[in-house]
Image (spheres, rainbow, N blue to C red):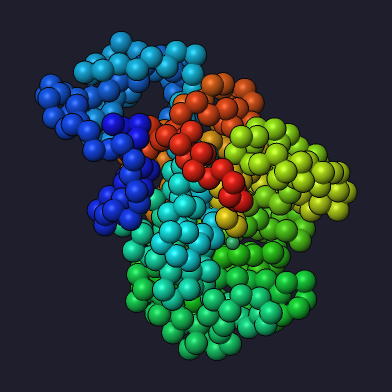
Length: 422
Ligand SMILES: [Zn+2]
């Protein structure tokens, strides 16, 4: 019956979401687990295993029981009740996207997460546009985290979901309001949007960071300018939700980074070059694909913007800054493009995969995820080719498992057919 189970059952089984959904063909006899032997572990054997922490085990084996990884080693070292042969394949942990903006209703968030699961993304953190009434209780399953409403200065004409603050006391109160919603991180925007607004001053973001830390919350900052990055590090910011975009980083910034534990989620802009899109056929409609291909042309200005951030990412990564992973927006397949962009910036595919798995889990606060290690949730992606050779091989997905259950990707795709697919 496993293959006919709806993904939503294990996205949030504790609150019974599956009851909302018509589940076809799931009323058969008791599952095979009922009569299984004491050890019900399934061993996945023979793949190249990219652990997520930088280690790679060629010809690996790992065991899964009750949705958890219960053993990792070389082929032959791990035993269980059932063996799945993955020779010729590569296994990576499910990708984690630490910067998204998901829907605002339960159904929308669940579909957003399902679409991510389809593409091998096991969890996502929503950064600052979740209004009052957004279904934050969906975080119970641990695949979704949220900053609630972020904090910024008045930005008329943009989203009114964030708190607009102009005084230190308003800034502190906004943090306390979000702490009361039990958010997972505080999001701030420090950006004058090309001179349109007064951006947050050091006094304001200093108050946010101080109040957040008093409430045991970390702060992630949308930034644009090098100057603000420096001020934010001095004020104790925990994460950058974007790279520095106005100029190349300098030695002073590097020194500040090294004295701090600040983590970078690069969130690269488009490279401004035509890219391969055929991997999305079967997911996107022919019309959508044709439209995207038509607009995927060379763009020198975009190339220049990308160049600044690419040089900054390459330098900061080489200097030892912790690099995590996020895509912004609500595009479920964007992580596969982001990984390619990070490699195009000069990071190795191996380092990019660590950023997109272990480091992203840690920076977002997803526990028991991000690496194929005993005790972790059995969230993994089986690839037909090795992404260490070519990072775009993360798109060659054979299967996705979450909590040890294989996602029925074909059924999901069929269910989405005819809808717009972003
Ligand atoms: Zn964002």
